[in-house]
Every structure is written in C-alpha cells, then in structure tokens.
Image 1 (cartoon, rainbow, N blue to C red):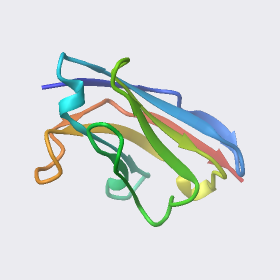
Image 2: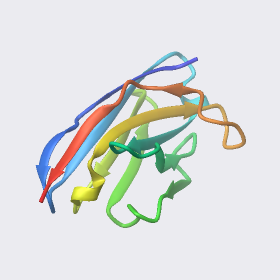
Image 3: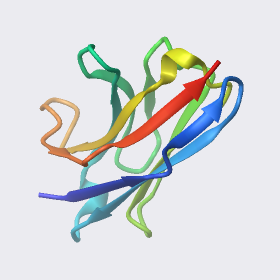
Length: 119
C-alpha cells in the first residue's frame, strides 16, 4: 500500500488560488492512479479529480472542471491539485487517494487538508 500526506490547504478569498500537494511513499507510485476528493461539513465525501498512471488521462467533477487541474510527478512521487477561481462552495477537507487501477475503489487515503474560501 502507498502512504499519502497532503499539504497546501489554507484560507483564501473567493477568486483566489491554492495548490494542494500530496506526497506518496512506496516504490511503486507510478503503478497507482491517483485522485482528489473533498468533504464539506455535513456532506458526503465527493470526487474531485483523478489522473492516470503517467498523467495521460484526467477526469474532473463538473463542479471544478475548467478551474482545477490535477497533475503528478512520478519521479518525486507527488500529486498536485491546482485550484483557481475558488468559490466559497469549494470549502472542504481535501483528500488525496490512490488505487491500483480505474476498476477498483480507492484504497489508500491521506489525512486531509482543510481549504476554506471566504466570500
């Protein structure tokens, strides 16, 4: 299994930007597809974005499409989520996740990083 640690959360005004980072441990990082999820207070955790093994394929939730960009650096074992044009409704705890392929559930999760967008 891969261990994941998120960072980069914080408080930002609406319209601003943040970049989240996720550091992975383990020798086979490039064997995992990676994703970002978020959970707002009182709501269920929801999918935000995913990226394939070598970054050739990405998928986004409709709510973030055109504003967020997921990327990865396999040499550094890092996954990023660049968030632009942030809205108050983007406020949530953001989680990094990993899975061995796109046909199984995400099985490894980080501890989360808080993102708060003020209006």
